[in-house]
Picture 1: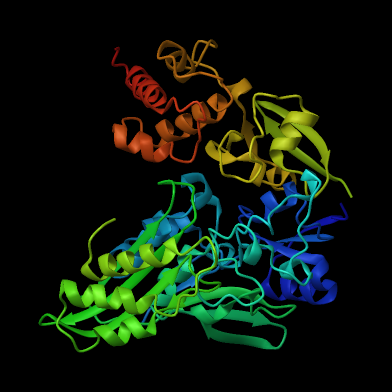
Picture 2 (picture 1 turned 120 degrees about the vertical axis):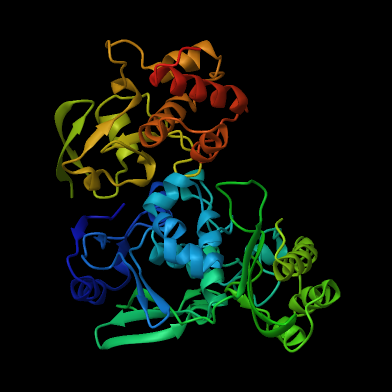
Length: 324
Length: 160
């Protein structure tokens, strides 16, 4: 192990300057719920751990003109229990409750939930077991899942890497049209949440960090639902999830936002399904049709076609606002 | 390079030199010989490494030892009843046969301790939710929940 120092950063500027000077030898650590497990399994061995939990003023949930700004160091538990989020953005509260376990949610942060590594078992194989899969993500030139056991991998949008985006928060936030703020040495930029994720990781450039997620104002009375299908009720990642935000006026869908998790390397916006819904009277048949449209782009691997079946049903149920 | 960490473990001020990547679980077991804290998954899934950090249940395998600087850690070895004997949770786990192989037990008891400190009179559903991050491979969940409910009643002075 080369890890030689642990620095308590006191400002975003300081954290960025360490990242800039040390390149990929330094990694940021906040709640540590993903990163420390990776250290334990020797999946990563950075020279410098930059603790950003010591940066003041990055843990907040603030209202602004009908929308919300959430600091990257806000704990998942605080999102889950926030009265504002429960009342106005319940899709986000429902996603938060589904993350990990109570202890993980008390430690894990929003920024960490976005930046956590994928769950692919080839990628996550600990070198301590005596075998390492040097895949695309590790700088190799092969994805072991495409010809191996890919039951938990992507059915849409895989490119080189087929691991699915593990973040539940990003799925709900994308359905709310949220933006992520990325800070670098030359200032900040803002990107739609679903564009933050790419098949080999995320769009953060060297020396950049995620500082905030902002949710725009939403028309009151929207119908929101987050559904997550997984093996266990707790401590488990989504095989498939859906976040749905609908504006329904006099029984007709005025606007629809539908995002799927667990099926792609990024939160997958089901635009075809949104189009199916818009302007139509909301019926069970329409919801089924939207479910079919949502997964039309799917190209399953050898062992994960079941995700398409689950996804269609989850989309339908989310639209109708029924539970699992 | 090792860093000096001072922390309070089970009521005693301690000092240790820890590498920046060492977990608290590793330090408790290997530097202090406190084997009651188990390391099973080592990735935060199972809850066997649960300790109390400043009174709250946390996964010690996910906490860097250097982050425990200046904080209070209680492990299963440090849990006591008011009379210095077994804590009511430990007593209840025995009486309700809530232990099979025992590997999850320290984490279960400390998670329950944190839960009852926050909510002294939980419903069975609240106990299940509060304990949902701790895995028992012997699947003794029914008896574990019974034991936590019984300890809760006893700690509130309602004998049963």
